[in-house]
Length: 311
Ligand SMILES: NC(=O)c1ccc[n+]([C@@H]2O[C@H](COP(=O)([O-])OP(=O)(O)OC[C@H]3O[C@@H](n4cnc5c(N)ncnc54)[C@H](O)[C@@H]3O)[C@@H](O)[C@H]2O)c1
Ligand SMILES: O=C(O)C[C@H](O)C(=O)O
Image 1 (cartoon, rainbow, N blue to C red):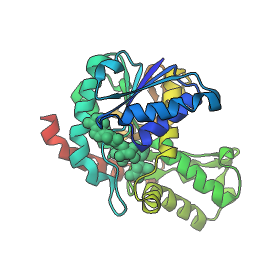
Image 2 (image 1 turned 180 degrees about the horizontal axis):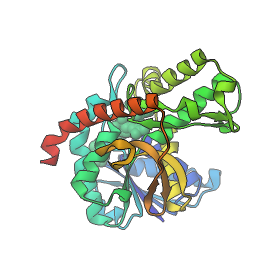
Image 3 (image 1 turned 135 degrees about the vertical axis):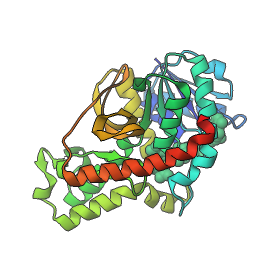
Image 4 (image 1 turned 90 degrees about the vertical axis):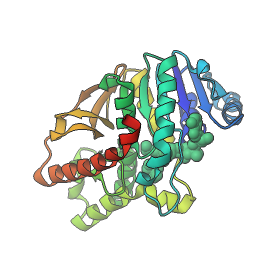
């Protein structure tokens, strides 16, 4: 199976690292616009093979889309990351043009690929890709919820003092500091609701920390995070390539689901060999529903900025 990752920067390279290390794909192509950069990342990663014991073939190319031909999955991480103090939404002006042209190039060479969108603002970039390529909705998937959910589980595990892998929890809604919705009511520690162990105040702090999880890391690192984002993309790609049918919160095009239309936003999805295989409908309570509608309003307002790109 072949995966192309566009953008050999922090997230793209980290994603290639996890995909190869875990043997998720037999072939990975990394493409970047910066001369020699992807080639260097691919060479560095390939020199891990004998020490970590993987057999994936990683190739780096400078803007040569012919090398991406017939990929099963393509991942778009190209574009600029935010700096401390910025929101993801401020990246739209630069990233929209990059994502649109990259997506069109990829489709020309891999007409059957499933598209995974990572560049920010991710929900808007997913909507742009979906609208400009005209693909069926199962083939355009935005990655954000997998990462936000892993952060939610991390913060819950810290509050509980228990391993994150014993915690089950999901974040839906937009992938933004104020738009994501950690589903605290449904989070559990080994099947037991977390509210059995944590106070309302503790749960509110966990949710608040989760929502600004990306901003916190950006403040600490000076640019946005990459290890957990790269691992989250690899997790999603694994579910597609190996038809795992995992339930992962992803940004996908809604046509009435969760009461929304004409928007890409995070909802629980079954992800398998056809990409998005099912949107899972869960019963939100009134408060969660109100948050979801508010989140969708904010994401839709961002999408309005795409007018010049969607003609
Ligand atoms: N959805 C998420 O959960 C999530 C998580 C982390 C980062 N991100 C986003 O992913 C994007 C990348 O982040 P990063 O930290 O890897 O940034 P980075 O600057 O390290 O890497 C971006 C790479 O894209 C390349 N690039 C720019 N224009 C290109 C083009 N037209 N064609 C090919 N390559 C091009 C750059 O040369 C650079 O190497 C950012 O927009 C960031 O906000 C999203
Ligand atoms: O925070 C960012 O800007 C990058 C990414 O969306 C993240 O959540 O790590």
